[in-house]
Length: 121
Image 1 (tube, rainbow, N blue to C red):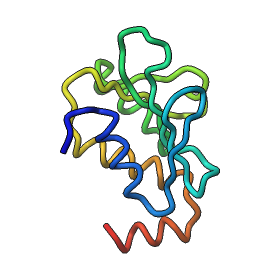
Image 2 (cartoon, rainbow, N blue to C red):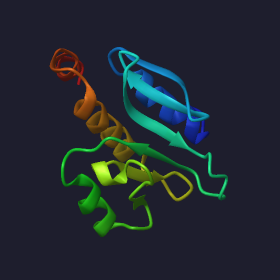
Image 3 (cartoon, one colour):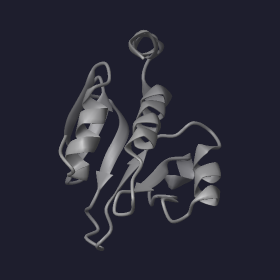
């Protein structure tokens, strides 16, 4: 597996049922059925930080940021809706990232696709 964070994130996202990728706001972004965003790569501010933003279950954003503010943050634009920012330019636990991505998918995917995911995992 590649060490490139974008490649790794892409594989995690596209492994989910009916997930697609296209550019949104100039960044790779992953959608459920081409409509609902669940993860967006975040390198567009070119501030020497690399991250992704994702949908998150209620309370997750606050819990993760308070437990580890060096790895998690409240992203601009979507943070007020509970979305989570995850830094990728720090030591990354890719198993944890996989769980975060699946949780993001579950937040936005229709029940039928969540059920399909449950059968696969």
